[in-house]
Amino acid sequence: MRNIGNDIVDLCHPDAIARWDDIRFADRVFTPAEQEQVRSSAFPDICLWIFWAAKESAYKAISKSFPEVSSSPRKYEASFGVIEFPSVVQGRVTTPEKPVQVQVVIEKDFVHGLGITGLTQDFYDIETGIYQIGADHEIDCILPEQESFLVRELAGKRIAAHANVPVSEVQIRREPIRNQPGPPEVYIKGEKSMISISLSHDGRFVAYAFSRLDP
Image 1 (spheres, rainbow, N blue to C red):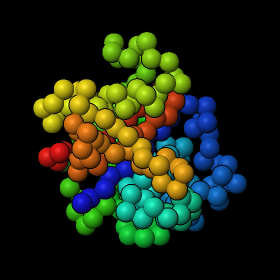
Image 2 (image 1 turned 90 degrees about the vertical axis):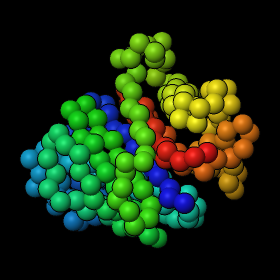
Image 3 (image 1 turned 45 degrees about the vertical axis):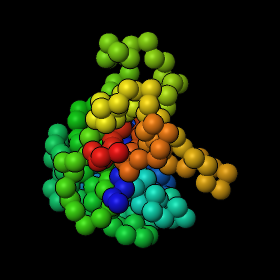
């Protein structure tokens, strides 16, 4: 079974602006090769968050198979070819365990990373959803602190449509692992499904990704 992870970064969030020249942050999070590519980029701030989203997505994907794996971003190295803006780029993240294939969507307001374990680079059987809080008529009334609930609700609706079941029969749970919440898992009609899912939120955006497999 392939596992997936995703990560969204709001490029307009105050914490995301002008971070590329924060040396202490860069040394803590990025490898020397990543730092060099960021510094030489025509858009270093965006490039920095491309690497971040790739590393976070890879960690979320690989940790489902290796729960004890380190979460330290410095131990994950992302590599891409030419990065253009805006675009969709594919690459690989070397993790403390196995490599993870990654794809990053680069837009004006956000970057969205998607990671997938296994040897394939086929991202076509993965469904993603990206929503801006307050910009969609269905989620105008959702407050920023409710992102976690919102992204589960949105993902649940799409999974229900995919599985052809009422949305009430779809649950997204995080079962505890060593007294900590584990990764999200999809249950349909009370049974754990084979659908791999990942949820994320940052600033104005929430995002999900799930594998389009028979439940």
